[in-house]
Image 1 (cartoon, rainbow, N blue to C red):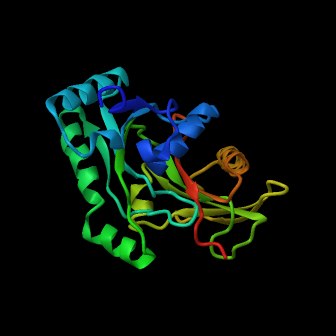
Image 2 (cartoon, rainbow, N blue to C red):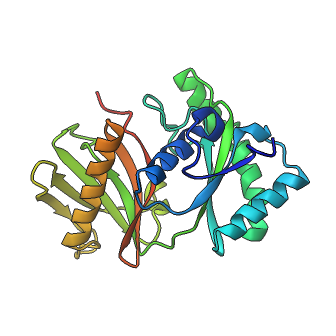
Length: 248
């Protein structure tokens, strides 16, 4: 167990060992996309928090040279081609060193939460083993989600970018209404521009940067993608990438 309890992002791609979310992130690290550094507490530990594992988690966190982390579940069946499990398991942001162990345990237990069980019953599947991703926290100036195919119109020639101030969590949870930009994928031209505050959160250059990255992600994975991103000091980071599972 000691050798496989924790692995850095980008070094292992076994979905059974690190889960779907961490596998996608590891692939992006390997492909040199800008991903916050991190590590994965693998399924090998079987949800058992020993003193040795606690110390290994703290040691790995210290190597990230950060004050806060994002701690996310990564189930073996999560972010798959047919079932994304989006929002069904827990994510914890701005976790300080002292809160790491509790956050990891809560990620483990979220696989058996009422909403996860309801989703699994609806889909006729199980989450499978749950790994946990710990990444250096990026305090985004602007964040959002982007879809390489228009998710409502199902137009494969259009891309949609949604943006909010700060972190994307209020957008993901549905608490805020984002700016929305619709881009023609063939020309890169901005087709629609819906600014909620009367003025665009993103500059034209930033919209182009996100659009190009999402296009690259779709090409890299070979299927339409749903991407969570953030800008910090005008640098784009990719936080998650999963298949769009709602297309006909």
